[in-house]
Image 1 (tube, chains in turn orange, cyan):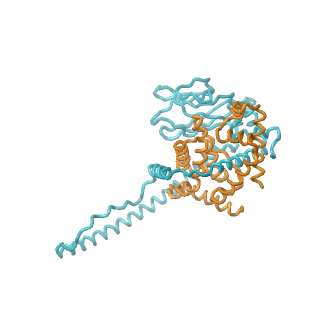
Image 2: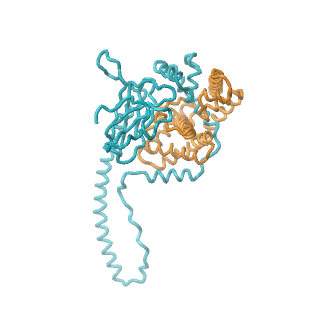
Image 3: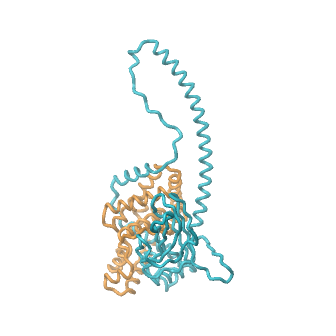
Length: 182
Length: 264
């Protein structure tokens, strides 16, 4: 539904515009909409509720201080926040300093994640896609995605050749794309 | 995938931030000139963002929202135009003598006239503040647009050098004490494996250099650092960029100096 998607994106942008003028209510609404995505990603990566809460707090606080970091050119707000939550959580996990340019990523994704129904539909599809993968494909993808490991680190941990890990990750992502496009 | 087949494995790893070293550098150089691989990268990031949904379930505790909203409320705000007076304590008028009513009525008339004048004055103040706010908003929008262009990785950035000369690494730090530090660099060499660039502020009081942010250049050798956390009240004498181990050298620069401020 491209029309519905446009409307919801406008609503996200309208909230961001209201936040720019210091509207705390708009911030609360945006938080209600996306805090569970940000928190659950951070919790999955960090495995620690307190640390995940800190990531959640940092991301929304930064959005309050600099709402201009998000604009329509960044793509879909839910997806953009999910990408940032993963990066920040991995930075915290590996005790890295936050990368300054992560907010600049452009995320191109079809489903709009602003509504619970869209999120739920997309979640079912992605879980279905993960189930179609072989266990080794899924593990390699999850180690890279949720543990922030490089392909060399995954190869070392699993005892598999580098090339095998690379191929597994790519073919895993191809199956994900296929299921999402269906 | 619609991108170049030979880069397909590396693009997937790059989207996951799992590609390092020479492979990363080679791919970034290719991305600079290949629009179809750049588009594929955006799509891969989109696909991967949906992986986040598989974690759905746990909700943040209610106190997290309270903590956020309390922190937001403490942030500096625009001054309020009108203050609400605290409500006076209720009194029992029934026990007071009759003349008090007339005196109170007279006082109310004086108060009403005074309030009308104050109201009119507040309206004028409000109109003036509104006009100022509108003007400042316009200036802020213009400033935001300028900053957005400066920091946009997609913006065309061209370094002009003497004809025939090779572009050299260079940087520009713009600093206002307690306000902003904006650092823009160009023509930086790609990072060797497990290395990172680090910006340093040299205080005017001769104190030790202060770490002002780790950064990686993009495929074109450009990088920005915007408002890194810095101690309060530091006057800057100079800035420099060093090449450091990937975790950075937070206490003092250990690596080689890549670029340094030309003057004090």
